[in-house]
Image 1 (cartoon, rainbow, N blue to C red):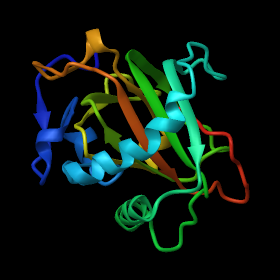
Image 2: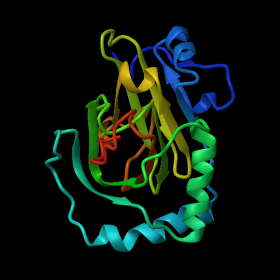
Image 3: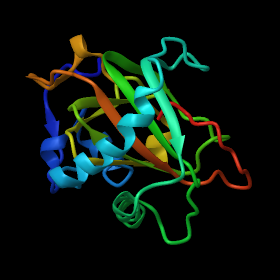
Image 4: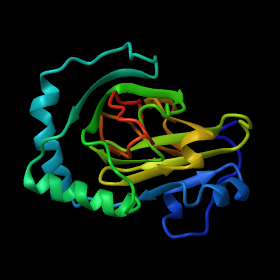
Length: 217
């Protein structure tokens, strides 16, 4: 079962933020499910939070997502950013996406309340291309990936505030992913208390499609 059993850490830089069911799945996803802790400075995290807060505050938390994947959330898509935030997003693009990939023009912003969570799901190819990259703000959380055909194969990512996660290829389409609810939020034996979490998600354009409605990434 995901989240149980012996801790298996990859022997690569950043291994303290990735654990899995065994060496095989760690090797398989070592380039497809990546965490870069400390991607944002504290000032950069505050810059994004301050810019997003007024728009998010105008929205209510919801409990029925269009594909039933999210509970306790509010969200928006944003295309206009301050100069400082644009510079941050440009760094995300350089770090996570290949030069030939085109990004969706609107960035998906997802605000989870302290008791909110994202259920296991596989992203629709209609709405995202091969790569998504998310910045985590305010609260640490744990993302769990589970193979859709072999549930004994799983990976967990520790997403601390200011970190960047990248999912591409097999991690997107062969594994479901979720954000654990507070009472389940453990990374190995370590309790990861959840509070309000904001994610800022950049997505590559679906091949041959202009798809705009956001998935629950």
